[in-house]
Image (cartoon, rainbow, N blue to C red):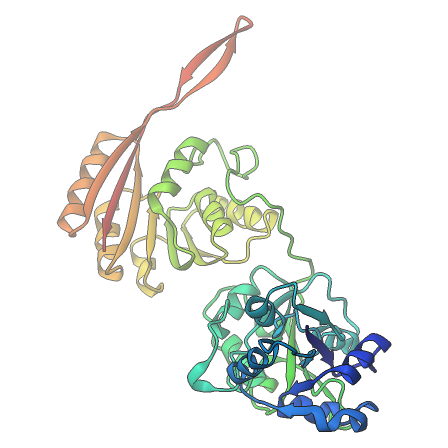
Length: 425
């Protein structure tokens, strides 16, 4: 058997102790060797401890031992809980569940939250620990640059760090983030150094990102970021399909549900980047896009005060944090916005040609979608997009909805809408 035993925070239980006493070899990194020296069992087994700092060498050593006809049990010491972003998964993948047993200690994240006296059931966990060798760093699910966008969805994030992705770099990433509505004043960072080590080695630092960015910290450490928004971000599970009745609007001025669905499909919004909603109206398209793609920076451009009020109410109602409302008239207001990857034009105020020209200058590649209700707007949109070098496609959406007349359902047609799509690689 290969036993992966977590250490660092609690004394060994009887089962772990017996396994260690009866094992053929005990493997540990140099750091964990120093931790294990403080355990009372160390003196009895120190001659069996082998220090290997490289994961591949560790795996190969285990293979060389368990493949022998009369092999004995091998112990691999791990930090905390080996199955929490630890080596446990690698060992199971290499040797199989039948051969491996995991005996966890507390995780460093559990310890960190207990030290700062915060609950951790509502936290999002990220590992930025790419490994000690800069030339052989692991491929991570999230990179350090993803932290600001993750804070758009989670009030509380716990991060396993390393020497490259350290607390100061995380703080600097937050400070230079271009994501709207992420204010450093609402963020509190905790850095928990050398958890489980004797005092004064173990240290907890609580500060805002500005202060953390100028500090250095001992390894190992974990970072906890808590965002004080005055409410808890909640994921309702609904990502797409808001109805006209759910979205605050005025006088029927809203992109109809069926048209909005096709529009979003034509836009093919990316997971991240910049999205312009020009003539946003009630913000229906902006809200849907922002909920579908929380890491996308959405700019809702609108000139009417009443509509801006509707957008603001919808943003608050649906807890959307990646929309910035821009008051002003296109195309003039567009010149100061970051270059878009997608553009939706729902209203142009008779200035469609100038808006398309402004988009053409700011968007070297991407998709623009224009909803037109008149033949004149359709013809103009196609002409000006083609002149700008876009490949143009047109769809006509005709919608009929059931309506009760004399206790019987009749289909009542809405005005058709032309969806003009311009794209270029």
